Image 1 (tube, rainbow, N blue to C red):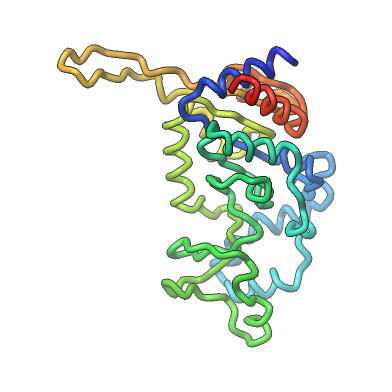
Image 2 (cartoon, rainbow, N blue to C red):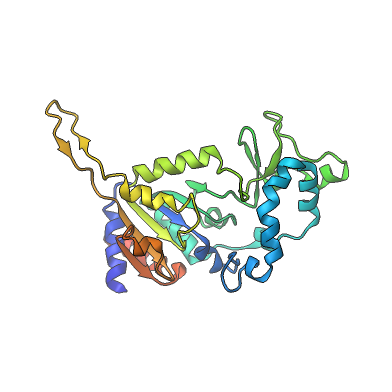
Length: 279
């Protein structure tokens, strides 16, 4: 383990443009349940899963009814607003502060990366603490709009003050496209990076799971020098590091260069300490 920590720190310090991808494995260490694990919210409540699959269709058909149901039903995740980042989130934030991580892309909707100090953040599946206009993609903190007041005044759904579009929660439902701004920026980061740190994701939920594969295979072609000789030149390989409790398809397919097996909240702080030593 110690050698793997040192290897990861060395690779990070020597990277030019490192990014991180994170998933539910980071949130569960803050006490937030996943969906399909042994104690997952859908494992315990299959009806909630069936309802989730129809949520976006219901929103499109009846946004007022969708909002009324949202505001009168207890969320399956409990009070996310009071959840606190763990040592893994803080370590990711510290790697950004150190100038090593340029962007963090997360599947998680809990807002814990932001609380943990990350600023250049792409919330791929949205954030439960935010609202988003479905037309212009403007976003607000959930408390910025008096949703309960709108419900009492029979003025749901909320309407965007910028473009007149319908507002929904920022979280991306089944069947809902990934917001264009986030999807495009994530692809750009996957193409740009020379190191990708993958933390706590099973890498089976698409299209998010495509990002490591894009980073791995982007250099399969040939680049050309800018001079007149036009000699073919291979671009540098992307280093892909996994930190996961168990091997994933990325491990089996050889997408990742190596796997550090364990809890992100334990391994990431050790990597940060080794990075500090190297710097």
